[in-house]
Length: 89
Length: 144
Image (cartoon, rainbow over all chains, first blue to last red; front, side):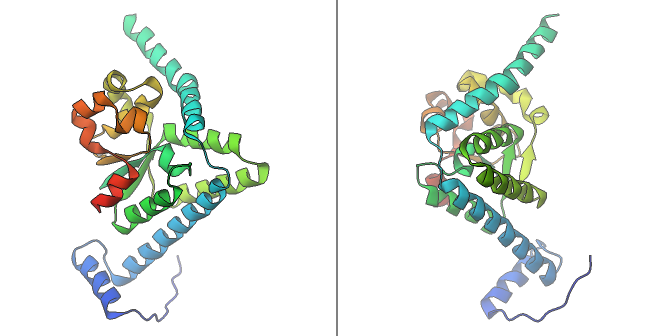
């Protein structure tokens, strides 16, 4: 992947935090740390967008329980049954 | 640290939706790994399909595909947690057993959920070794 170089300004405290994480071995370099922060920020933004959509039509505990019961019946119960049948043979 | 997220905290409900948003922020900020399961993904898909208009559905599914493609969220599949299902079924109602079974995996540090009746106030779980792994959103946020 082609990388672009840019100059960014950070506070001393921000840079200190990045350097500490690099020192601890969490990231191989400052650049990798900043790339990871950007990726995570994008991930959180996507979640927030999903939440914004979903909040318009929130789920009730009853709806959650109903869907879960359905998923259990359709996806897992047959699986458990077939396991039991195999065991009893 | 790996945090298993129940459907109840991934999908805004009536109970404290602002805390759900905070929860994911805290997990990412602290460098923890959010985890879901195939069971939770099926539930999410069903909820999206049943609850939303065609336009909302398209956006929600696109967002989820994008979220999954980023590789930040770890997915546990049934092959991994099914061996724990038998024990989970002795502690909790059937429909919630796959979630508890995944929480029992040794690399899962905590399960965060909102279900008071079946998880948080469940007497069987409270008496078991798994009790310390199960947290409400409020409890989790208070820890970090």
